[in-house]
Amino acid sequence: MQLGKVGKAKLRIAPSGQRLSIPQAVRKLTNFRLEVRIHSRSAGKGSIVKAAAYRAAERLSERSTSVVSGAAERSGSALEHGSEVFDFTAKRGVVAAEIHGPDHMPERFTDRGTLWREVEASERRKDARLAREAIISIPRELTREQGIDAVRGWVSEQCVERGMIADVSWHEVRARDGGRNLHAHVLCTTREVTADGFGRKAREWDRKELVHEWRESWQDHANWQLEQAGVLERVDHRSLAAQRDEALTRGDLATLAKVDREPTVYLPRMDFERERRGEITPEVERKREVAARNAARSALYTRLAELGGQSRELFMELRQKTGDAMKAIERSPWLNLMLGRERQAEPVRDRERELER
Image 1 (cartoon, one colour):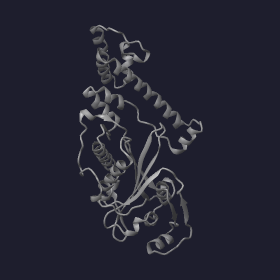
Image 2 (cartoon, helix red, strand yellow; image 1 turned 45 degrees about the vertical axis):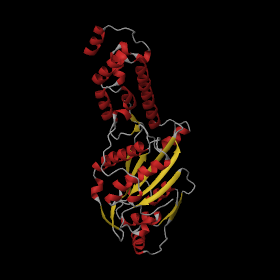
Image 3 (tube, one colour; image 1 turned 90 degrees about the vertical axis):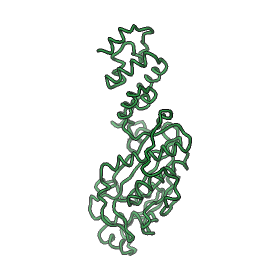
Image 4 (cartoon, one colour; image 1 turned 30 degrees about the horizontal axis):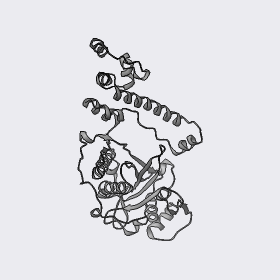
């Protein structure tokens, strides 16, 4: 599905700039991911037209980006020499694709092929940045329609209001754990858009702070949708370290059990395919090592939740002192739960001695 300019009045979005706090009663966390990538000619990843066709599961043609063909593109000439056709119409899992842009965006840019061919033609440098892409994971707790609405609201506030044109594709595939994997790819232009076409390069969009603003805004839009859906889970854009520190300060073992882990290792497609064939690459090995350590921590927290009481209090204090869950266990024979050797009745003086080490 391809749409043209979408007015904000049609979107169910959280108010701009609204910071949604996460009350203690609903502080159950679900996974958060908003990753930003740059598509440039120097990266050697191929045509931006090809990238757009793949994400939207469409058939698009690319004209040569030489100076001659670029001039032809801008003048509207039908120069097809050197063109290549990218056909991804057989690709599965694309559930929606739309183009959003400012009100003054030329009508021709509602056509995906025209939009990205003119992006290619507007850039002359061999290392030019062609697009900025946000990859957004949508919480599983939301329906497909709710997830699409949440991304539309975010795109309207963070991309269109800044003057970008955003080509949005929603994919829904089976995740590796068997659940739903609903996510969005948002390809954004890097130049200002005028009524006639593309203008100057918008360098202010290159600020590092933009990524933080995008992540914080997606947190708010996703949590607003979760709240509207009556779901208790929330997302948190902050780093795992920041979330761990807050959970430790509050003494919140349940939240700590979710965030006291190493970041998930996302495999490049090539490594993912190799893993499926049974091959072990350095990235696959690193992913498995991280997964094993995270599984050990998860088992530790499950056991701690069962024990409660003095074991839980001692662990929280040692975890804060050592900075690591496994080191906290190593420091205390009483808390060596992984080996099942906890003592049933530890004298208070021994507990104090462990804290003083």
